[in-house]
Amino acid sequence: EKPSVLGQAPLKGAVSLAVKGQYAFVAAGSRGMVILDTLDPTAPVVFDETPSAGALDLGVKDNFVLLADQSALRIIRIYLFGTSFRISGIPLAGTPAGITLAGSRAYVSARAGGVHILDISLPAEVGTGGLLRTLPAENAEASVVWKGRLLVADGDAGVKMFTEPYDMDPQVIDLPGYAADMALSGSLLYTALGKGGLGVTDLAPLEAGGRSVRLETLPLADVRAVCAEGCLLYTSPS
Image (cartoon, rainbow, N blue to C red; front, top):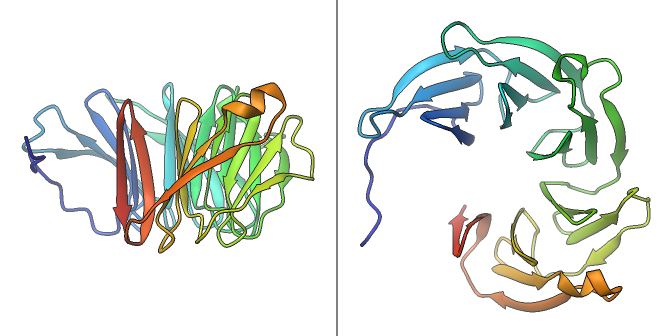
């Protein structure tokens, strides 16, 4: 059965979203963060809005949203029966392009600003000592965490892999094209490579002390985003 559009909400500037239950949290550029109630998927409605200067990406953890805008990471307390509001924030170097949440850590890919690692175990205190360290990158677009390793889609520099405690000498996985996004499915890493297609890398040999194995590159047209859900893989052109 072919996928079909059930409903839509006109949100100019929408660039990223996360879903929790019946609610969709949308980073909507200059409009900030918009929360949609999708209880009726054929007619989603705006439930709440939080202003922000150029919302670029977000992630949801418990009852908080981590929202990256053009200059900072902002922590927003979600109230589903009241107005959501910002409780904390921290300025970050670079331009945030993606947020990855893993346990009590947030990894913010900030292009030339590198990858910022933050402790989010106490969301209200992120602004005071939440930044643990920043890893260097040429153009960090996205990241994933796999078994003590942080893999970064670093534009023309390919994929960089840092091993805990995240030393400054990462292994580079050389891939053809511009590494713009990544997704994990088990030990397989899928990398959106722009006009280079979709890269598939097996990380399993790393557990035995070996090196990652590049399996293949699928010749897809200008892949800029990738998402893995179970046995399904979704890609998006520019």
